[in-house]
Image (tube, rainbow, N blue to C red; front, side, top):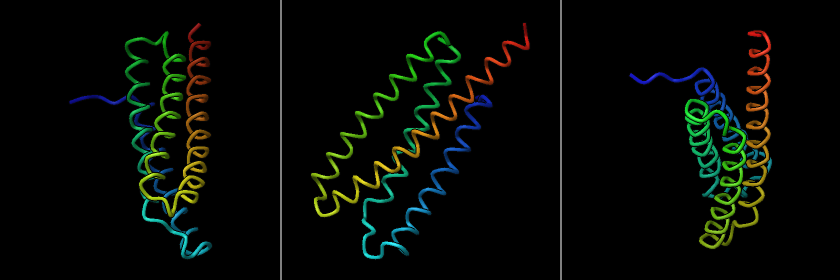
Length: 138
C-alpha cells in the first residue's frame, strides 16, 4: 500500500472541492444568468484544471521527497508548462469548434486565474508552514 503525504492529500481534497464548486457554479451561471450561452466544451475546462492539478501535486510531492532543493525550479517549470499546454489546448479547441471560441477562451481564462490564485495560495502557505516548522525545531 502506497502512503500519501498530508500535503498531497490536502491539495487533492481542496482541488477536487474547487473543481466541483467552480464547475457547478459556472454551469449555473451559464444556465441562469447567460441562458443560451452554455457550450458543449464547458465540462472540459474544470476537468483540464483538475487533471493538471493532480499532475502538479504528484510532481511536487515526488520532488519534495527526492530533490527538495529543486522545488522552486520545479514549481516555475510546471507553471510554464501549464501556460504552454493551456495555450495549445485553447488553440486546438478554437480551431475545432469555431462558433464558441470567444466564450470558451473567456471562460478558460477565468478558470486559469481562479486556479492560479488557489495554487499560489496553497504553495505559499505550504512554504510558510515549512519555515515555521524549521524555526521551531531550532
